[in-house]
Length: 156
Ligand code: 4NP
Image (cartoon, rainbow, N blue to C red; front, side, top):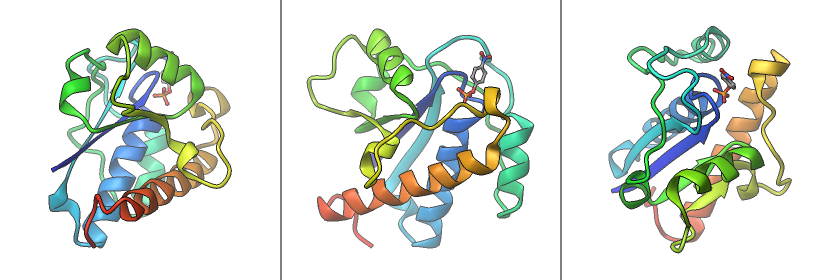
């Protein structure tokens, strides 16, 4: 099993979007059973809250439901349980490191570092631009999948 955890600040906008987009991508490629995919927050601001309507509405366009997802916080023990811990922006990487302590197994990356154009994913909580977030997340998930394929981690 390949264990993937997407992480953002609140776990209501970007990381749930990445969780559902990546799961949908793996389902469409018939590889979902090789993965455990989840998402979490570095902050405690939104714990227990459902996915933001901006993310829910955007994913609805593609027939993806976010039903049943509520914000949870990253825990130190997640470092043991996940193989890939993917932050949305540099600030998340600092937040992740604060919670897990250190990253001796190099499990922590920024999602768009798997693309040809490494950068942060802007926070739509502030920008209001969920279309841009979606495009960035699809680009990041495709880059991450290509990395897994190149490393012979995933079999398609
Ligand atoms: P997210 O967006 O990190 O993409 O889920 C945010 C959601 C809530 C807050 C910040 C960012 N907040 O401060 O409550």
